[in-house]
Length: 166
Image (cartoon, rainbow, N blue to C red; front, side, top):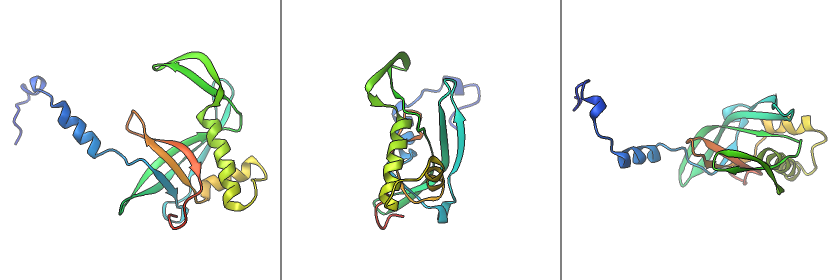
């Protein structure tokens, strides 16, 4: 039974600490998610063109992370592009219009890491971008993640899955 009548609801106090504890308890665990096409199916891929003309491929699929003795599956998405770009510089949430000439953006870094991971796993680099995309769609590898400000997982790295984790 509720402690509030409908008319009292809008005046009800908020327990911010309780709300934060609930959000934390329900947060998706960050870590190294391992793809497993046999269990979760393949990732889907979609070619996208940004307003500035940059072509990238967005991937969407499920993978699992094991924390202590618990394995949790979540949906992940990430984009990569062979068109190298430098990291944009932001002031808070505002794009300053400047770039850091010493750092590449996330799509470029994920592309480079995917090529390196493919090479490690297969003993040779991919012959073309299509072969890399096909492997990312249906291969076994790890996606290192962090929890973003919006509560969604952000893919930071593509790397080889550790033995026994796939």
